Amino acid sequence: MRWANLALVLGEIAAGPCSRAAVAASTGLTRAAVSSLVEELLAAGLLTEAGRSAPNGRVGRPGSELRLSQDGPAGLGGEIGVEHLAACVVDLRGEVRSWHRREVGNRGRSPAAVLADLAELLRLAAEEAGLHPAGLALAVPGLVRSAEGMIEGAANLGWAEVPVATELRLALRAAGAPELAALPVEVGNEANLGGLAEFWLAGRPDDFCHLSAEAGIGSAIVIGGQLLRGARGFAGELGHLTVWPDGPRCACGARGCLEQYAGETAVLRAAGLTGVGGDWVALLAERAAGGDREVLAALAGAGTALGIAAAGAVNLLDPQAVVLGGGYAELGEWLLPTMRAELAARVTARPWDDSWLSVSPLGRRGPLLGAAVGVVRRIIADPGAYAGG
Image (cartoon, rainbow, N blue to C red; front, top):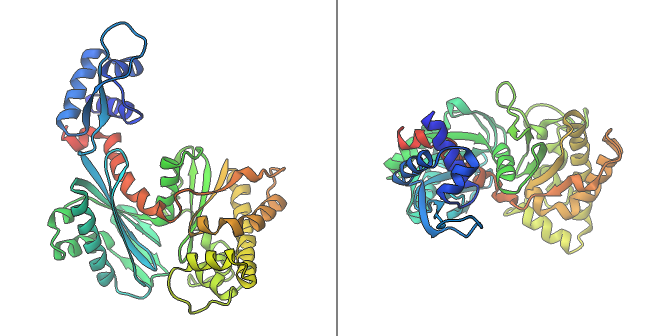
C-alpha cells in the first residue's frame, strides 16, 4: 500500500508543482500521510522543494512548492538507425540534458561494430549530462523480443537473432563505462517508442496510429492509452502490409509491401536519386521545396501508397487520429495531399475529416525521446522500486 501511495503522490506532483496540502486534497490522503511520503521521496532524490507555492485563495500560510528533481535519476536512451546512431539523457522532468547523434551507415555492419560506436555515444551523453541514469532503453529498427533484449530480425540492417542487450553491456564495459553496463537495459522497436513519445509529449488522444519512416516504415498503434504490442510484441509492422500483391520483392521476402513504394530506397529510386548518400529526408525536402518535378511525383506516389495502407489501418482500428512521424514529418507538406485523397476515398467512417491526419512535432527525435523518457516514467510510476522500498 505504501508503494502505491508513493506512486500516487509522485504522480500528482509530476503533473505540476504543488504543495503538500494540495496533494492531500487531490489524493484524499491525510496531510500527515502525504508529509511522510514526501519526505521519503525527497530523501530518494525524486523531489525538490522550491519555495512557497502560489496563493490558492485558501486561509492559512501557503505551503512549500514541490517539484520533480532536476538532479535526481535520469533516463538514458540510445538509438540504432540504418544511417545513424544517437544517445540522449533526460532528467526526471523529461527535459533533455544531453544529445549526441552520429551519421553512420549501419546497413550490413556487424552488431559488435555498431554497438561499440553506440556505447561511446552513450558514455559521452551520460558524462555530459552529469546525472545518474536509472536505466537504459534502446530503440532499434526491427522485430524485438523485449523480454529477452533480442532483435529477432532487422531486415534493413541485415541482422537476425542478435542478443542486443547482452552485447551492448559488453560494449559499454569495453568503452570504459562499467556503471552504464550495470544498468537495466530495455530494447524496443523504434516505431513503437516514437509513438509512445508522441502520446507522452505531444498530447495525442488515447487512440491513434503513428506512421514513421527512416530507412524502413513502421507504425505504433495506441489504443486506450496503451501501446498495442500483439501476441509476440510484433504489432505495427505497417511497412510490410501488402499494397499491391504482385509488386516488387521486399527484403522481408514478400511482394508488394508498403516499403517498396514509400520507403527510403523506393522514393529515392522514383525520384531519380539512386545512389545519393547522406540525409535522404533533407535531400528530398530541399528538392521538393525547389520544385523538382521528379521528386514531387515520387513523394506524391509515396503519399498514395501510405494513404492506401493507412486507410486499411483506420478501417480496422477506428483510431481518433493518424500521425506522420519520423522522416515523414519533414516531408508531410508533399505527402499529405495524396494521403488525404486516399483516406477520403477508402475510409468507411465517412465523411473523412482531414484534421484526423497530422504531422508529428517530434519528427525524427521521437524514438530516442521515447526510449529515454520511458525510463523516467517507469520511476514515476513505481518510485518505491527505485527507492528500494
